[in-house]
Length: 101
Image 1: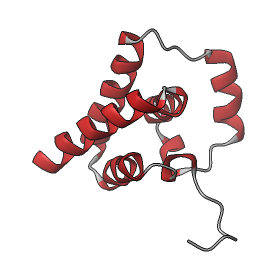
Image 2 (image 1 turned 60 degrees about the vertical axis):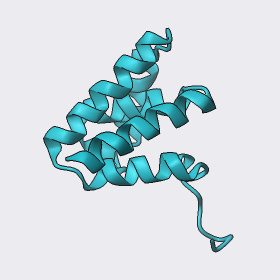
Image 3 (image 1 turned 135 degrees about the horizontal axis):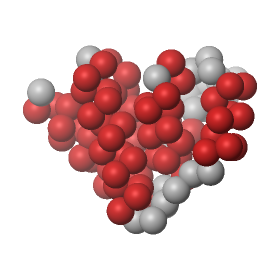
Image 4 (image 1 turned 60 degrees about the horizontal axis):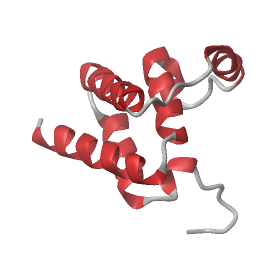
């Protein structure tokens, strides 16, 4: 990869990068299902985001493709703060789900 290109947070790990790419290319309904799955998994592991900080970030950074949908933006924030092993587990579940459809 060109060192001048800024790497996105989810491109650091190939499994997560593939999962995010599949979500990006999925139909809106599938994106919503994946977002719900990510949020549920985060909550199952007692991971929560502070809504006020997210609200500020959402209003400021509404330039990424996933920021156009609030549920998806929340899900990606959860995915970003998950421990590495959980990120990988969720990514594998997303890949499996979207490749079956």
